Image (tube, rainbow, N blue to C red):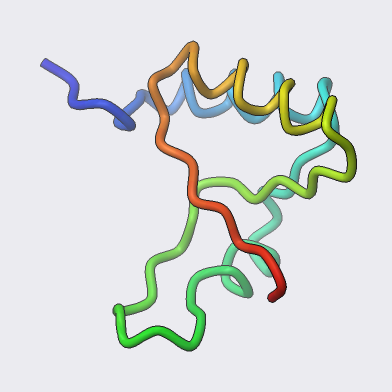
Length: 79
């Protein structure tokens, strides 16, 4: 049984495509590495995808999409 947030490679590709279609999304390796760490003491962990939302509608589209897959969202604000 899959735990929430785990998905097959096919699901990952479908999710990325849905997010690209909705608002544009970054799954480029350099972008993922850049967002793998911050100033917290928690060890670095590369995200599966990075989304750059610019409007309220972008946020709604992202949350509706990831909810279909039961994927947790981590928000980074203020860089």
